[in-house]
Length: 613
Image (cartoon, rainbow, N blue to C red; front, side, top):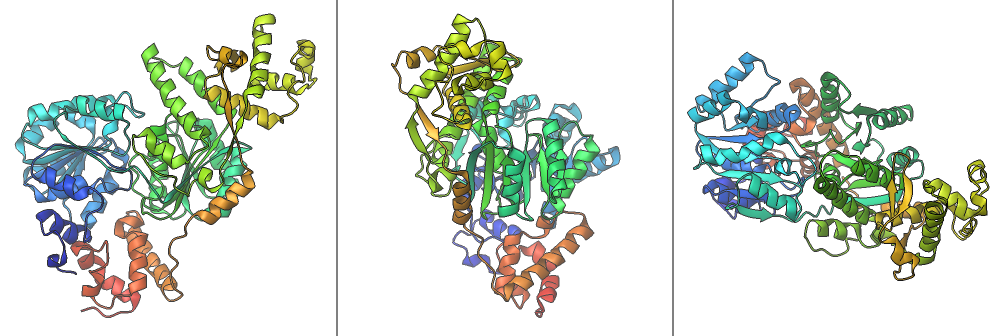
């Protein structure tokens, strides 16, 4: 293993990074954050998924005296997190509701005896007096509050149990705290600082750019078939997550994929806890599995090789979308974030906001979130620029999203907008009637359907005045007018109504710019061609990599842990390419720390056919 003297930084933190985790240098702003917390300072860290947030509290916990207490809502994943740390030689444990009395008592004894480096707790445990008393009796190195956006009611994943975490500072004023999140707008950021009593903490904001993820959004046209095409042509055999809005949609999509030869498991709150846990465990441990889920799935998933995240329904907020798409490509290799989006999504989301519980301020917050998400979907500019701008970060066009690869046109849609608004006006004001988009479009296209004839809509002056556009094009116009709030939607049937902004368009006082979708086939081909492939292994290294993967799979099965807990693909690829002949050479590979070298080194050399030393 390379000696610590070869490192540019020889602090305790850098030596721990090298010895335990097998890395020679910190990434991004990790070093500054770690040294600040090691010195006893409070920190609020905003860093993207896959950016190395966990090291920002794990290393200080190992360097400082005492136990690092990690507050995390991810009960279902704590076992895997602890297993991964123990495999690195870190003394880790957890306390949560899944354990019986004897298991909890053992962890408590380890804590009090100073035999733990890290202790993971669910936030609700800190509302139990016995837990607080336990912590009082031990030595705490730091408090890490993971998924800190859960404290924000402005954010997308509010958890009431997080509100009590502000009391940590009052009870243990000398213990440093580090709060971490992968998504936060300025409003969420400010609320986290206030609610966790971190106003005096040092704030660290990393770039939210994930350049290895290709963002693509396309109009819905039989979305399940569109998804199947994506998986067959671009992600055959890859692990991925598909998000749907409803439980029924999750079940149907999982069945559809399975019937078409893709192993897919459903995950939603309607399934019993045992089934959910089993499906999550299979996703983490098996290669190439697809999970179809509601947003209940995936928070904190540390699986590095998720190659795609697909949305079959419009997410409610940019924060939620970013958090969910961030579960792809944590290993830094090329990945896809794909979203199918249509008129009905907008109608459905607006209706959900209008009927949601809470006061007007709450509904306004939801509407603000949705408006930002719609703006991302309808932009003619670079998706990545728009996405990062939402989080207050400037960037330049990425060249690797759909709008960069096949730029959409912006066209003057003022006249079509006037025609559509006129049709709504005639029905609403003259006939005292309200209808959904389908009926309005039939009127504009001059279709004499039974419903048009029944309501005598073929006698309207606007009947047949919109034949210059096709039905799909008109649906795009309606969708974009809804996104721009130039038309509204109300009621259980999603009827279209005029808004205050409609008048300016009808009076020719306002121009309406609309997005024209490029040819979808061309876009898909361009996207596939533009995605950089992982560096291909040589003819000699490829079979070695497969042997290493087979060895890793056997180890993972024997230990009952996900394969990536043993080693990431990235590390195995480097081993296969460099083909180390001795333990010393193997120790220079990134991701091979002291514990893993001692535990697996000789087995790897045997697998390679090399000689130990």
